[in-house]
Image 1 (cartoon, chains in turn purple, yellow):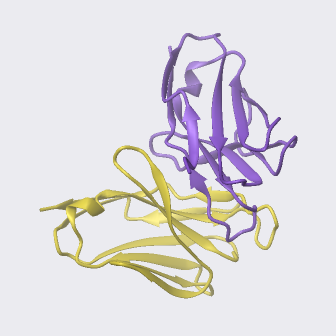
Image 2: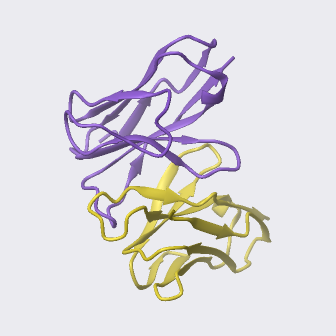
Length: 114
Length: 112
């Protein structure tokens, strides 16, 4: 099993450009999450999904959109990138979203917005 | 607002030392997670615990629900233990969602 994979691993954008980050998991997990990690701060939840066709906002959703058309994929979109979106983005998945459920993380995408 | 606080922020140890990383949280929870972020960036889950103590190899995690405190201990530390250790707690106690709020992490460096 590949677990959780993310594409791309690195990306540099100019302000105003758009892009989509792809997360894929092969563990048949219901729940998927997008986080961003910034220096000096903990991981922060951007959006999450509790199943195919569903999405919900997390702690820092502004400037991002998501879609979960297939159970195994969770896409994160930036419609008009801003320098404040320079960050490392992690995708994660879990079988169920219960409090004690382990989350499995992808390797991360390092995004720089100039 | 749920908060998760970790201490220390940075920790340097000599190989072989016993290490303790602390985590405190502000609201009642049903489970607490410890994760490890490797120097290359990858994040893996180490423990999930709701009471008492769990042990995996040289890593031991304890939790005191009443005091809202958890500790991660590393015995006989080794340079390969160098990483950032993160604790996380569910945002909504008892909720079915289980979204996690993360501490800022403790950066551990073990010198040979």
